[in-house]
Length: 60
Image (cartoon, rainbow, N blue to C red; front, side, top):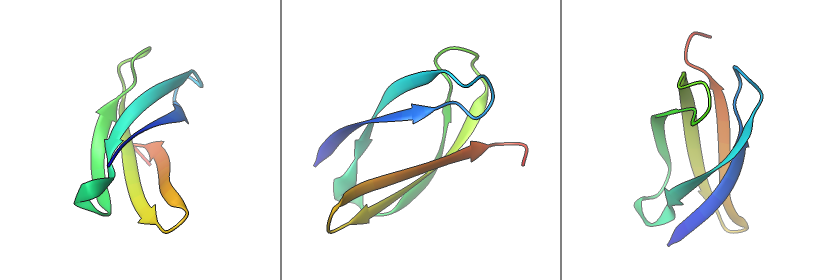
């Protein structure tokens, strides 16, 4: 299942959309901000209520 989620960049604060593939289950990956190009640590958790995406700075 493919979902489009909205996240806020932990560096520049800009909001942007990202596409996640929930069929692979829980995941951790790095995605660059589309505005400031800094690396964002993303953690996708697939729950019965839908996907939950948490983000944090790569340098934390």
